[in-house]
Image (cartoon, rainbow, N blue to C red; front, top):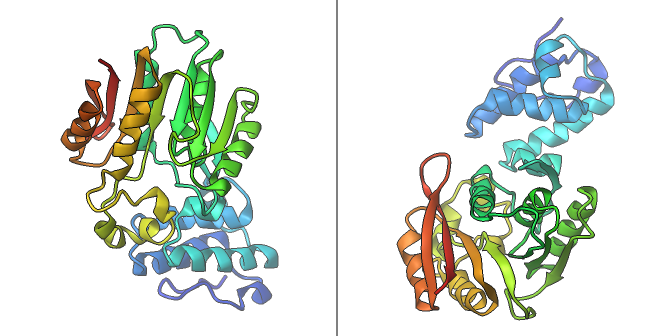
Length: 300
């Protein structure tokens, strides 16, 4: 059995030789990803090889001697090139696990991060009756991850997800249908709350909060592959919060709560914006890493 050298990329002619095993493919790809500056390259290589084979990643550990057929090698060559160019694995797969859901992604949607589950947990902890017929509003819905996650836990709630990008709203609709939640979730295209009226029990958002001048210095997986409109918070990172503060003050029902995710170190500035709109700061929630992540506000 011949083994692809660790320093070499996966050879383009490997499909014709019939000798590229799963183990060799993982070794070669891990070296290529390490050279590209990707953290945990062996783990990433196993994920990409498994994706090319359409199997669970554990198969790459339990069956390293399996020989890749021509179709799998062609898929692997394309996927390896994309990941080496720092395209995130989730975008190669076209999906992301979030809460209890498997969500489709597109170039128009932010790739949901586990840290955003902090907002879901905070919202649930603040609701004394999860069977109540609540009205939810999700600003900047993207994949619909936050709204759909909450609807899975709130059986009588209904919600609307707002996004400025029609393509993102379309992805969210498909995710709602796949999760069996399309009868309780609707998605609309709007610039924040301009198209909304009526009172909401729970308002939430993970808005763009990166300062415009900082985006290009982020990891390539973010700077190159996330939709810029979902990242760019303006010169000071607070443009979206200024809009959302007014919308929350107008739409939030007395006794309701609004939750906003923010970036590292932004809690005081976001709280000041919300307070300036007449909202009361209730608490700040931390994520699993101990970082301040979610601001909770109510009506005065």
